[in-house]
Image (cartoon, rainbow, N blue to C red; front, side, top):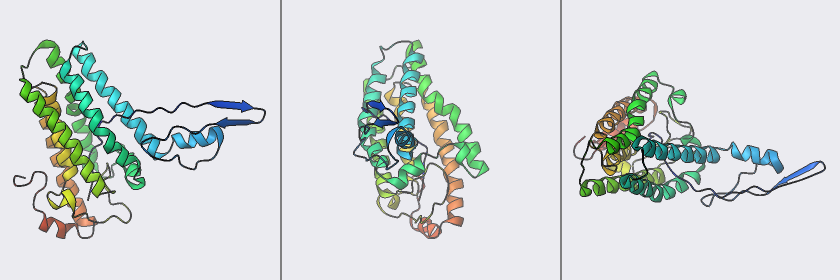
Length: 276
């Protein structure tokens, strides 16, 4: 069982490179190990380092760093100020909770390979391509609208609402951690990977699409954590896109993944236990 959208993350990389070149040779020292991971055996010197930077682990790392920087810039540039305490707390919660999640991903070769292949260009099904493109607009608005809301004072969310939102964001990251720990085949695209099996334990024993559950919680939690009632609109639209995606995905898996139809007979709920 399955996948979800790639989520924003943050890494801290302290990997200074020291080059020492002589006649006919160039030595590049070992980069800092990230999150307990080992550098792939990609050869020596500059070309070894070049191949290392192209590895799935480094692609995932660059994607996480880039997306986090973009989120940070979107929040504060749209707000027109750094005096936005809800955004600072939100970013702090995100950093603290995403580090163990990404450490888990980076140290799972199957998972890190699948998580670097996300987006409409990697989807094989036209419907999935359309859904991803459709949710991009509300997905981007999720990080711009809160800043505008803060700048123009459209919302007046109480402190307890912001605290609940940060709690939901932290919970969503924990949910994603549980999913990835249970399922190395949690790809970012709708596909059946080689040797993939139906996962029926952990969060998959409760709902069929726990990664989507964590994504939905993250969207709603983000709107609240950033103190913006208006941001609930793009958050809900994005969740609706996830629902459309999961229906198509389930139909695909019932046809192409052995044992998935039987699994669906045992686990009734798609996204929220007891509700949907």
